[in-house]
View 1: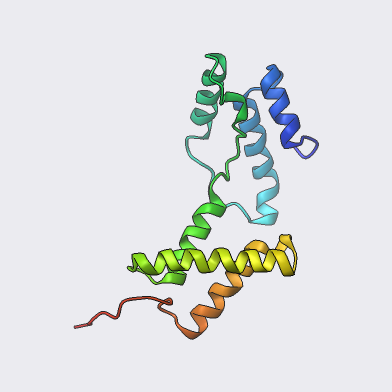
View 2: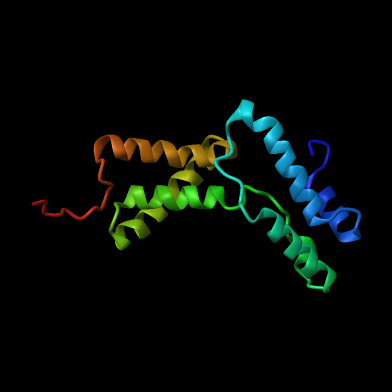
Length: 148
């Protein structure tokens, strides 16, 4: 898979040279080859083959979005990590805190991307979260609850 770009895979999917099932299998094989050394993948979607087959079926039926999907077993990891970070930053159990935490996280990421480097966008958010948790472990807007 290292020799294929996302654009190349999308083109091969569009022309029928490659199926989503084959692409998903290549990704899975590549992960199984490299991940024991890297230890970077938390989990592979258990229904990966079914999702890929469904994408192939949509493409065969003429669905417009079929070739747009790029199959990756790690889809959504960054989004779920950011959602987790926002909840921790704002304070567990505080909807308003999570909303404000989202704005604070986005602001920190954009400041980091603008003034340092766009490569550090995600890192700046997590540095902010570590700093907040060092000084206020319950998050910025956690409700105080009575224990006992």
